[in-house]
Image (cartoon, rainbow over all chains, first blue to last red; front, side, top):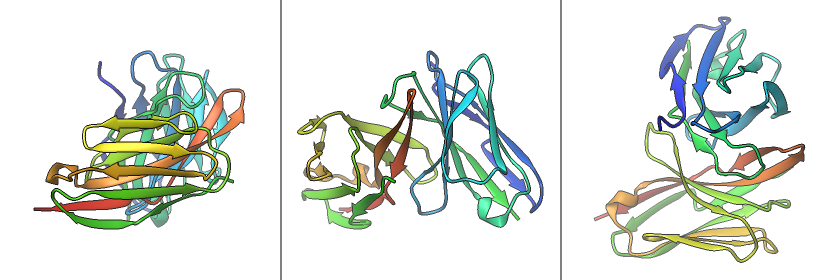
Length: 113
Length: 114
């Protein structure tokens, strides 16, 4: 079992650019959540996808958008990048049903210059 | 809005000693999660506490949940260097139709010194 896989592992962008991060959930999981972890902080919830729809969103601007595909994999898109978007972006997968154990991927380290 | 507070944020302890990390949360959270994170790595799930009075143990770590006090604790027994990491607790907010989100504390950075 490959677990939750994310790509790329590292990314460097400049302000104003757009970025797409990818996530494949653990086998058997159908729910994908995205979290942003700034240096020295706990992860913050961005949004959650289930059945190809965003079903909950945290306090993030519309510049952050996502998608879930029929095979349950997911993308996180960030437009008009700001310096403050520099962070570790974590994808977590779970089987539908609330409060289930979340499995996190290794993350994508995004640096915005 | 659920808020989660951990203390201490930094903990330096000698090998062989015991210590407790505290996690307070502001509103109802029927489930409480503990994760471990090593530098530059992702989050490793340690415990999911599902109900009031729940206690779970794995090796030198034991977690408990008191939903009435809105408090969870992570107790470390006879610390060893391998336990050095950052530990996060997270509460869970359910929003209906199966959707939920975790709210994390700021983490406790634990250093175990020989």
